Amino acid sequence: MTVNVFISADMEGVCGIRHWEQAEPKLMDYELGREWMALDVNAAVEGALRAGATRIVVKDAHNEANNIRPDKLHPAAELISGWGPLSSMVEGVDESFDAVFLVGYHARACTDRGTLAHTWSSNVLELSLDGRPIGEAFWSAAFAGHFGVPVAMVTGDDLLKAQVEEELPPGVHYVITKTGMGHKCARLRPPADVREEIRDTAAAALDGVEGLTPLRTEWPATLSIRFRHWEHLSAVEAIPGVRRTGIDSFACTPSDMVEAQRYFITMHRLGRPPQ
Ligand SMILES: [Zn+2]
Image (cartoon, rainbow, N blue to C red; front, top):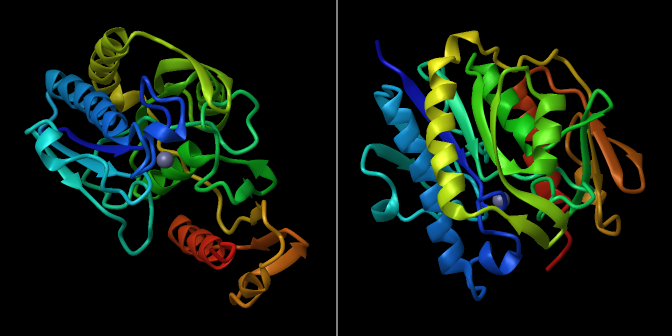
C-alpha cells in the first residue's frame, strides 16, 4: 500500500515564531525563522515516514514561498517552492494524495490574541463563505477537499486550534505550538517538546487516515471579502461576477473551490493599496 502525504507549510504558527521579524525576508531574525520552519516540517516528515508514508510533497506556502531551503528539507520529501498559477497554499495536491498536513498555520484575521493572526494578508479583515467567517486552514482544507483529500494534522497556536475544531470535519489531529497572548506575543512551548509531539501526532494521524472526511463545501456559495483599506478598491469592481456590497466589501458566487480560489486571489490582488 502506498501512502502519499501533502504538507502545506506556513510560518506564523511554527514553534518559536511570534513576530514578523522572524517571518519576513530581509528582517532581522528571518534566517532563524526559516530554519525553525524547516525543523517543524521535518518533524512532520519524520512522523509520516514512521507511519509508512511512501511519497511526501511539501508546499512552501508563506510570503514568496521560498522560505524552506531545499538542502534543509528532509531528504525523503520533495519541495514545491514558489506560487503556482492559482496561488493556493495547497497547490499541487490532487487525488493521488491520502492526507494533508497543515504545518505552522495561524488563526484568521481579527482573532484577538491570535499569534500573527491574519487571512492571506493584512489587507483582509474578513473572508467568509455563505456568511461563515473562514481562515487559511479552512481555505486549504476546502481546496484539498475538492480533490477528495482530508486534512489529517494541523499545527499552530491554541486559537487556531479552536477555529480548526469549528471549521474542519472532526478527527483532525492538532499540535499546539504556542499559546497566543497578543498579535506579537505568545507563550512558547519548548521547541524540542513541540517537534517530538509533531512527529508522534503525524504518525498517529496517518494511522487513522481512513476515518477522516475531506472538507466538502456546497457550491455555488457566496464568497465575501472585507478589506482593511477601502480607499483604492474600484479595480475589484471590474472583475466579472464580483459585486460591491459595501465601501470595503465585495461578494461573488463561485461554482467550485478552484473558481473560488481564482476569485479570491484576483480580488485580493486588485484590492491591494498602491505601494
Ligand atoms: Zn504565512
